[in-house]
Image (cartoon, rainbow, N blue to C red; front, side, top):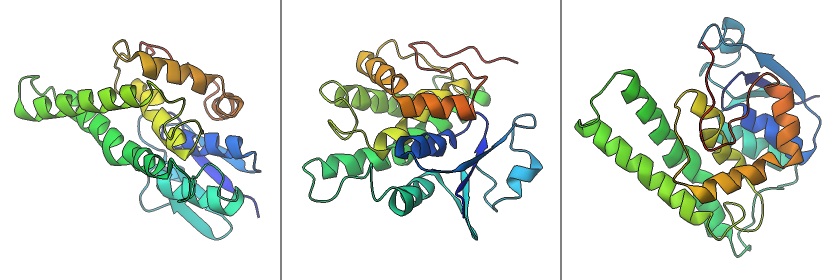
Length: 220
């Protein structure tokens, strides 16, 4: 049986492709274009959630970034890129592993939704969201001040989970990283990883990688 990764263009499923390249495991990649913004019918038919990522392994069809990453790491990677409870940085690893989809991604999604509705910047919802946005980036920037990776000196799935929000998600919600020097340096390290380079060439060959200070210009 071959592990199949279904990738929807400009979506969170790039995380899973990157993970597979970091682990150097065999997988089949199937890519899907948006139609025009949402997933096409053939992608939606794969899982009731109709969202990316989706993986298939034999009779198993699995969704959710965290679930897919954990499944692949433990079944095919021998637990690599997860820190064990005996590791000195285990608590830090746990926090940042869950932080991306527990705090970071929801904040970005809420901000994107409010902006699309043209909610006033002075409104209560926008004030709360902007405050959370700034706090999230301030915490991330501080964490990366003295740490090469989110869990410390070791690259882990916490990094795989976080990078999408800092890069490709800026096609959906453009924002600058000018105030966050440590985050910019972090993305430079990410861009130098062979696994990341291979993954993005496979799943997003036509996409300008959003690794710089300013967000990329999204084509209409």
